[in-house]
Image (cartoon, rainbow, N blue to C red; front, side):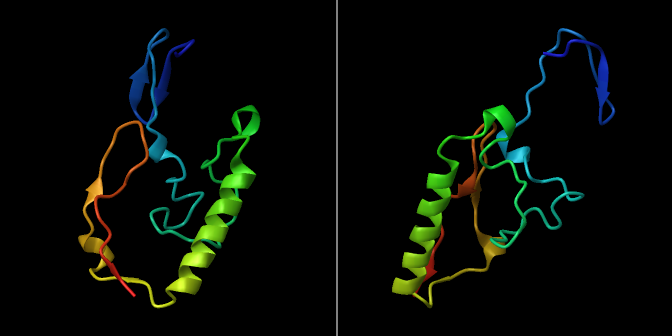
Amino acid sequence: MAIEDADIGGVPIRAGEYVLAPLRAGNHDARRFPEPALIDPARARGHLTFGHGPHRCLGAALARLQLQTGVTALLAAAPRLRLTVPIEELVWRRMFLTLQGPVAAPIDW
């Protein structure tokens, strides 16, 4: 809730009004993350995936380890894994407050 009048990106926000930012908006500032829509595992840390400061996810280290282990095992088992359609043709599930992802990801290996 805004505690005083403000202007964000040309939108006036009055004291007492609620402001809600969708989760998927994080990490999409092109000034901070060049090509923010590109998945880049080598990208420098500093993203908001696991929160920040006092709101940092307690399971972040475990989640990173699980993701690294899972992707490594998947690529070892199927080194030629690939999409069977161009990435531009994927249909994306759009949600307001939650994360989004493809409706389907047709693959071959």
